Image 1 (cartoon, helix red, strand yellow):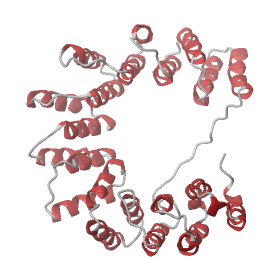
Image 2: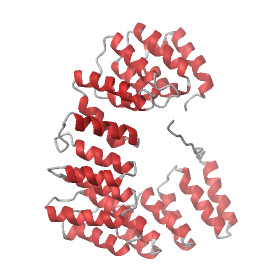
Image 3: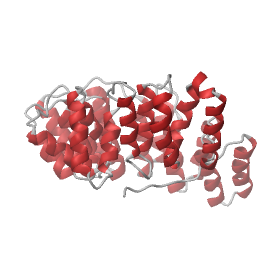
Image 4: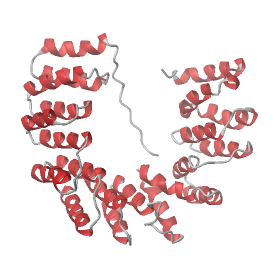
Length: 370
């Protein structure tokens, strides 16, 4: 269990004085991810301790750089990077993407970002920065990367899949128009590019265009893979396109010779459940060639609550209990379903399960970019 933030200075001080960190750097690996809540400690660690610490490594510096991206003071990432260079360690491909994230939070982003790129280019890690766009939901970061690519006439459809990374980023940021534009600019469209566009359209709720792009993909001769069908089935589920979803699922075997995996069955269960076809969804789970996991059962349980099918919910509860899952959300949902049905004794029993097994529901949290 992580210590409360207010205890971090005391804990770190005791470990330093006792020499525990010097003997076992593993302590530091556990503490560093907690440091964003203590900017002064992070600054002291990078500027004072790391240069004197014989066991400090590129890995430990990277941990501090990455942790500082979530700090109220993103400049700490650059302090840790400077410490890394002063200690004569070499950056690696994990060093630069979080530096771009920190730079994007600064008013001087264009200038600071250009400096990060210069460092990355000099050390041969430039392409790693653009891989960042796959995990980025910052439109500012993505546009800047896109502008940099255009300015330097970098090829999008290369072995690094820069085009697919940009399409993926624009999709995550809700700019499907830009995702489509980048896609059509590619001379060669591989399965990664097709998947990035289909996924982007799916997560933004544009199921009809998602299916249309899939038809274009088939006509182009590019074969879909498991990721393609997860995105398609997800889009159909959220739009309640039951017929199209069934056709898509069946085509995996009939048209492409692919065996559906658990994640595909989960999407179809979600599709049928949202549409109120709970009996069919339950029958599908029973007919699967593999045992269901909590995600598949959770989709059916959620649909049971939505459509007030308490009989299905009770059967799903038995399944979930047989898996001995420690995820509190399922037991809370089961309790809520019983309460909605007026079965207060069963609702209390479901809540009591959490207490008896010492399962705690983590409090929700949120964050926003400044």
